Length: 118
Image 1 (cartoon, rainbow, N blue to C red):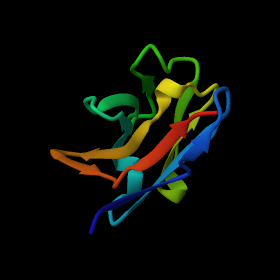
Image 2 (image 1 turned 90 degrees about the vertical axis):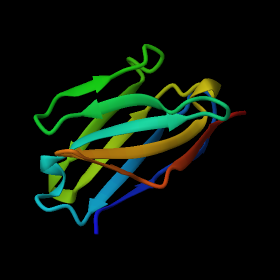
Image 3 (image 1 turned 135 degrees about the horizontal axis):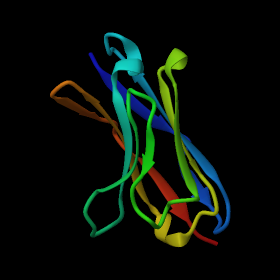
Image 4 (image 1 turned 90 degrees about the horizontal axis):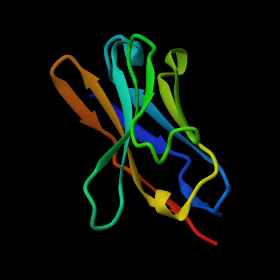
């Protein structure tokens, strides 16, 4: 059974850093055949695409608000995708979700809380 498990969230101070990890299991071929993304959802807002790392090795950040601060990367050998978040701001507070796309199927992790506050 395909599964995505996020880790690394928690509380950070403004200007601090966190690294989120998403480990995939149960996927034939591992994450090398998956397009992996991170989304986030703040209270009362829609889920927002943050960054994508395609199976071809292209990394893209979507909101202008995270460009230059967030970096998505992957380790195919360990079936893990990362989101390095630097210079965190209170507006980055949200539940962050790992997402995988394989062919016509979409998979989600359970989400992990990131809170940026003094």
